[in-house]
Image (cartoon, rainbow, N blue to C red; front, side, top):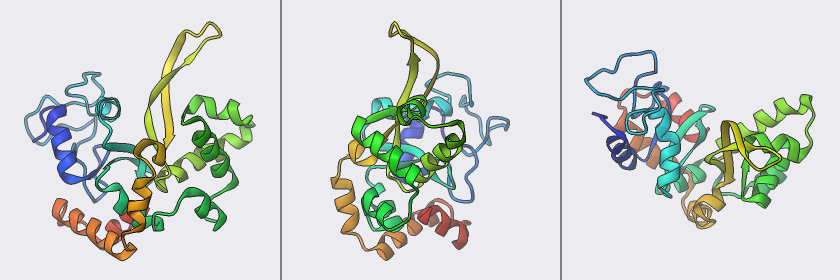
Length: 231
């Protein structure tokens, strides 16, 4: 049972990965109920209360602020999810053999917009979502391509969410809602994560993740497992 952030963290480290929302997508979610649903057991955990101890929405950022062994981003089904540092090399190996982004781009697997965004984040180390458009001088028409590219880069596990940040006024004062901050996976976890991934045969990586999914959810289907693993 998940009664607190501590329970969530323990479950995540044990599982290795999880969907970030209440819908398990046929795979696995630690908090397996949505904001408009009652929990299946007695627990103080509720979505969107703002309580860092019992609000799963707050836990997404809390793990990034307090730990360096968990990644969060739109990794699965174009939706938010968690992966631990221990399991990330297996996903990298399964999805593209642990290749770096520029190699995948040169192979024609990613768009020019993805390349522009990746290079911006790589150069700056961290970039808030609200700074991408002005930094790249994107038009309104290009903004849709930007949103699509950000998801593609996360699904490829080339960028992760590194936290959140408010806009700043000319005087340097923060204001408004916070937006997502992106960083490259190699900056977040180190290039050794990709090196480790390249040492794992793709079939072995797939099999390892699939076995873990079946432990977490024996009712998962082969089609869902494949889509979850390969992106």
